[in-house]
Length: 179
Image (cartoon, rainbow, N blue to C red; front, side, top):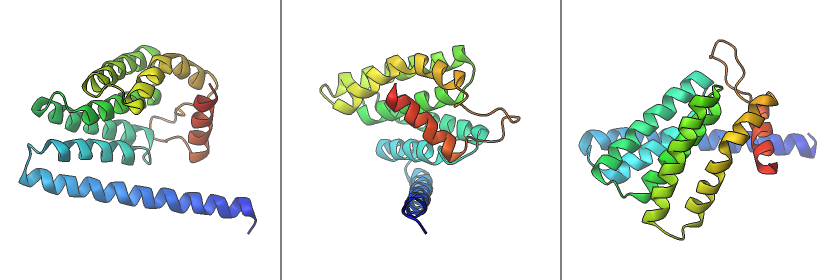
């Protein structure tokens, strides 16, 4: 096995471990919710875990999982509207959903929602560099969305059931990072 093959195998192992970790976290959050549906921290973790697990799904399932995560985060924000980490995670969920959506107008709606949530998170925790960076990137999302889909790096239309391959995901990430 050459060095590149070894690195690819290690990357795949790392991704599998990540999926197992977040799937386990999701199930723990479900169990905790049954005991205490008003636990804001649990709802926030649950929404975040759903967002992470969604990355490993086909496009249709991924979008449904992201929407479920948004729902859990909205529940958390009903209980505590100033919970900055829930605001930040829901912003990330909207960005993710926007990039999975080929329709530019629908994607822009999600990017605008993300911008509002990132702004609110930053208002609750001024100076947080992650929140600031997310806000800056959200403002570039519509342009990136256009470029990603123009270059064929977005979700591939196969009846809405097949997700992008991991190499396609890597191309999208590389494109966005270089933008």
